[in-house]
Length: 502
Ligand SMILES: *Cc1c(COP(=O)(O)O)cnc(C)c1O
Image 1 (cartoon, rainbow, N blue to C red):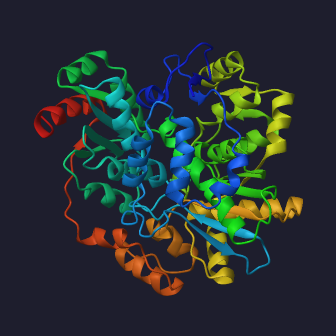
Image 2 (cartoon, rainbow, N blue to C red):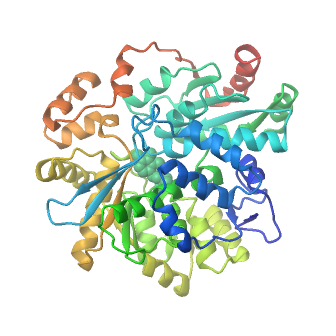
Image 3 (spheres, rainbow, N blue to C red):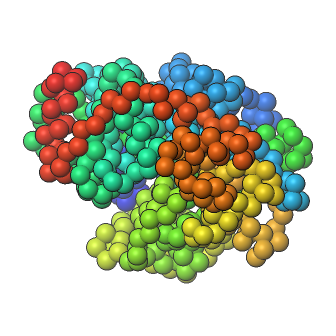
């Protein structure tokens, strides 16, 4: 299995090469040349554990990895210890109100957000890929984060051999809990630093570092190679495909689905379009998904696109209670459009150029119709998000986080519009205890000055327990308090390479 680029014909790379490179030289994203149809293996796959299923699926795509290497990655990533149970994900039926909905909890990992599903395994893919392509080098992972990604990347790379990780976050741009999660990060190879400014400052600073050839050469002398862990890397997308297969087989085992032809719908709270694209790829490999329901918050650039075929980022940006979906450029949509355009590199190159220079592109009637057949788009503002959190607790006894609530509300819109009662999996992407103040407010509690006080009130009212790793934060030593100016981020990287990791 080889990989091509969405924007240029004739690019052909191996799996390990695309994991090391992250993005193609001309800016395109890497996609597999084919997707195998696995339908004939379903009876066998339905009997596999999550880890067995992951190994089986990865072996279809990581053709220059040995079975032992794949197995080693999976066993190191999805341990019962890191995911507080035998299986790393849980499917919770919420069918009291007569709806056929199942919440797929993807947040039982070390940082309590779904990004753990990919970022726990990416470091292992990456170190093995590096050994094949640049055996003398260590990887220096640079991340700019608006919250969840930074912490999940830190936990994923913590003490992984031959890697260093440095995370920049905006000084005034993450939640108190998220900041505390990063400042108390453990590990010998980690570094965390605030940037005076907002997320854009941190992100553009990191982009500048990646293209700074002088800095790159200086680090190479020290045996370090820049790498990123962002969500366009194939090594992050691939692990997300597994849980859609797992959910399908779990519903089959429970008798909710009776044959391997029975359909399933999925609802995904969407930002960069990675998670929902993974569901689409599962469908390409034979999982019969009826409709992909794409849920946006007030930044509804995607749901508008699904309705109109016009992708238009020229609009106001909203800061919402579901910050991991506050995004106006959904990078992974490029991969869907590549598939739906019949792998038209030229069309993708010109749309993406239009987006970069004009802020919009239009895909035309034919592709727009295809998108509408497969996807349903809906959006939900903060007020609706809050009322959904409250209703979920009152009617179903389930405490959900704001991102998940956006998905639940858009599912309700879908039901109202279509009456389609196909069994539905709703991706639940974060623990409610990561967003204590907005969840407390939604369920009518007084917002506490102290996050941990608020956390205990939430436990009481919901009868659930906060994840141990979040509770433990109150006792942890703060290790990182450094703040740098945007223009000094490059110097800071060198400083870390010399003094901390030298
Ligand atoms: C990143 C994130 C999302 C959005 O996922 P995409 O793959 O970017 O669409 C949704 N919810 C939470 C909690 C996240 O951290």
